[in-house]
Length: 435
Image (cartoon, rainbow, N blue to C red; front, top):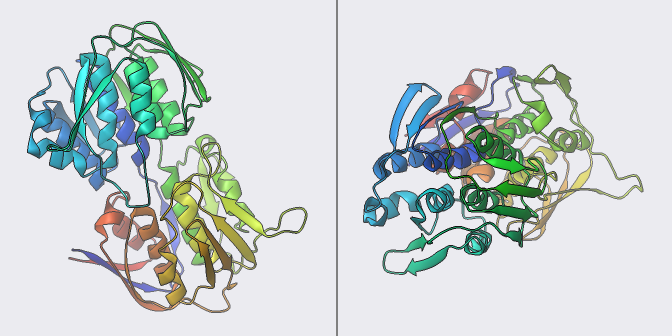
């Protein structure tokens, strides 16, 4: 098991280029299963979850070629369905949550498929009902093998229909869309997720020959087609990493430029960090965060305490709630952090309290942060990363703390952040990976 050893308190300075979007990559990679033709995808991040999905595809029979460091071609001309019932397949697919999104394209193109119960972060209950109900409405029949821990799905044909999703699930919407593009007739999906990841997926599918309208909204209309062709696609920069860098710059009093951020796809993210008092400049497609000796949390117009809460897009993404919380530790003023969408994402704050943060954990969903205003530095400590986003929040806290911190179980961080230690060292961070 690897660890990060960090000596905090350094001001950082320089440029950072965000990696390709992890959550988009998981979706658009699954879409390559919809065509026998070659699909080329660029700006793919070199992180564990994506590499595991690529290895899974190789076992399934997809021809994979790495063209350069961040570009791959995929050709799913012939697939090995026997492999999809093997123990090796179950073990590999179970290691990442995104594997559930192979069901939609397999069902759309081959009218059959299989996927195990997915893994991923342990951040509370993450149900799959939206996926299964949506696919069933298109005509899919599910069977669960408890012995194999495998979901099997098949259909004689998929038929377009109207559906109102019970929740605006991002991965659920992606799965249903990838099945519906090859269904007979028209599918209408209301309360569809409209994150930039879904926008990108639908744009890519239309380039392949799909007929999807309403892209970017929560009402998608899909006219099924019989065949999809190959295409080229480039991933957006990772908005979660961009938000992480903004928070890191503020809490460490650093001057950082984040390059090529695709600003028009960041939604409310920059505004939420501005509410924490962080100054930033939008220059071209870059974000510049100047050195700030202090940043003061806004109050609402009626004078009440600022609340930052997650919500489905275009609300504030839940993946940045941990980052907003840790950034608020050194702000001037107080803020209520409300994590609505997951049950166990705030339990990592006990270690931040050990470091000297003033945080009241009200319940599993809410925490009040009383900002230190840089009057007292956090203390270095030993921590264990519980999931990707909490792990990076701990890393940001350690970079601002006085003394030495050690973060173990950094495999969780590596699942979502590419060479984070190397990139942080390039702007002055004292961080070392210990294997």
